[in-house]
Amino acid sequence: MRVDRVVIGAGFAGTVIAERLARGLGERVLLVDRRSHLGGNAYDEHDEAGILVHRYGPHIFHTNATRVVEYLSRFTEWRPYQHRVLARVRGQLVPIPINLDTVNRLFSLSLREDELEDWFAERAETLPRLRTSEDAVVGRVGRELYELFFRGYTRKQWGLDPSELDASVTSRIPVRTNRDDRYFTDTFQAMPREGYTAMFARMVDHPDIKVALDTDFRDLPVTLRSAGVVFTGPVDEFFGQPFGPLPYRSLEFRFETHDTPWLLPVGTVNEPDETAVPYTRTTEFKHLTGQQHPRTTIVREYPRADGDPYYPIPRPENQALYERYRALAERTPGVTFVGRLATYRYYNMDQVVAQALATYRKLADERLPATTDLPAKMPRVSIPTTSTAAAASTASAPARSGTTIP
Image 1: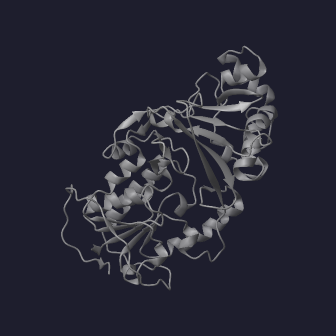
Image 2: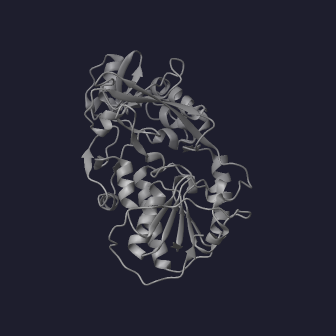
Image 3: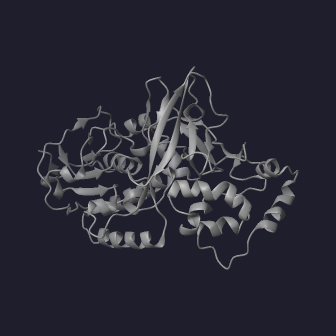
C-alpha cells in the first residue's frame, strides 16, 4: 500500500479524519493505534455474559450540532436515550444536576419553581470573582449543597480539593430551578443503535483505509516520515516530553455481572461521599444501550493518579505547560494535532467530531503533500496491517505519489 497520510489514534478524532481523507479527498490512509481495537475510549463490546458494555466507562452521546449528527448518521442508526443520574446523599437517591426535587427531598420542603432561585440566592456566598471550582459552586448555591454534592466527589475524581481546581470543573454541571432531571439538555440525545464499535467499523470500511492496531507510533518505519501525519495522541508523548509530562487523571474500571434483569433505577448513580466509598459512580449499561437480557452488568469507576490519560487536570500551571507543547506543535511541519489528548482539552465526543471535521476542511483546502518530521531514532519494523472490507468509494481522485509501507 502507498500512503498519503498517516493518522495516529483510532478514536473519534482519528477515525473521522481517516474517513474524510479517504472518501472526501481520495487519499490513501494508514490508521494506527497502540490498542488492539478501534474506537479509543468509546470502544464497546459484549462481555462474557453477552451484555454490551463500554470498556472505558459510559459514553453517552449528546449534542446541539446538527452537522455532527448528520455526519455520524451516515454510519449508524440511533436509539433515543436521555441520561439520568441520581446522587446518594444523606441516605437518599436524589437527582443530579440539582433541581427542584433535589432540594425539596433533601430539606423536606415544598418549594415551587418560582421560589427556588431565591432559596439559592439566600445561601450563595458573595465572591469578588470566581477563580476555583469551590467558588463556582458556593457562589451559586451556597456552602451546604457544595459540601453535600461537590466537594467529596471532586476530591475523589481529581485527587485535589475544589479550591485547587479551575472553576470550569464544576461549572460544567448546571443547577436547575425546575424539575428537569435529565443530565443533559442538548437537542439531540441518542446512542448508536448497534454500539460505537459498529459505527467505527463502518467509518473505516473503505479500500483506501488500512488499519494497524497494536502499533505504537514511535515504532513506525522511517519511510513513513514523507507522508503527512495527523496525530491524536498525547502531544507531550509525541515530542518525548522535553518539558515534562502533562498531568492527567486516570480511571480504573471494575465490572460486575449480576443475575438480575436490573440493578439501578437509572443509568448512573453518583457517590459524592468520599468517606463512604472510594469510587465515584456506578453505571448500568442496559439503561444506555436498551439491550434486553436476563442479567445485567455494571461498572464502578475508581479515579487514579496513574494509568491511561483520561482527564486533563485544569490548573493554570498545567495550561502553561501545555502552551509550551502547543508552540512546539505549531513549529512542527507536516503534522496536524487534533483531539482531546493532542490539544489537552476535556472535549465531549461531539466536540471532538466537530474539531476533526474542521481539521479535515483545513487539510482539504491545503491539498498539498506534507513533509513530516517524526521523532528521531524510530526503528524500521514490520507493521501488522489489517485490510478492511472493500467498499465502494463515494469520491474518486487522480493517482498521487505516496509512501509505500515496506
